[in-house]
Image (cartoon, rainbow, N blue to C red):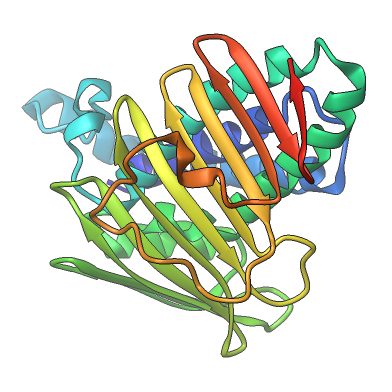
Length: 279
């Protein structure tokens, strides 16, 4: 089971790296590369330490291998978050391909989309919340964290740890398997920094990030439905209405944001500060 946690974590980090496709080299990418290196080294060490156990498991048929065909039915926050990122990457690919056709628009939109990837890095500890909390704690420990606590019971889950710089992080949320929906709040040293909610929508997901603290953007809304994608971002004065367990009706979910980028059936439209552009 520990191997599965590490594989999920590695896949999630690589998905975040794909989100940055088409953007300039940044410190965020360097962070991702460092995380991938750390996880890879840790996984290799763990594989060497468990080689004898794994050989005996193969003989009796009880090997803890990853069933790639079962990911869609894995009812844990970790697996749900991986599915969410996979769907969002499909939408980002669609958006990036179209934006690249307009260099001026891509420069503006590309930086804003990069902000979304940075927000996803804050939510990375969702991959620790699997069916085996001990394995999740081991994965978090391998990333240099301490005082780790992970719980997942019924609809509720939570993660807390101290990182290498002695900052204390925690997250608490709910996961509904029926709607493949998560609502979660993150804090750093007791101060809220982020709320993420998402819910299954068509072939993908609808999501919203509410960001507190120092940020140029306080709300990000996303709907991904296959290759169709709508992204909105801007500033709000109040926490948005919850979408936990309740998907928005359509892509107009993002229309109340200052910057909006939409692709439907291959046609792109942006609305930034009241100025509409087709791409």
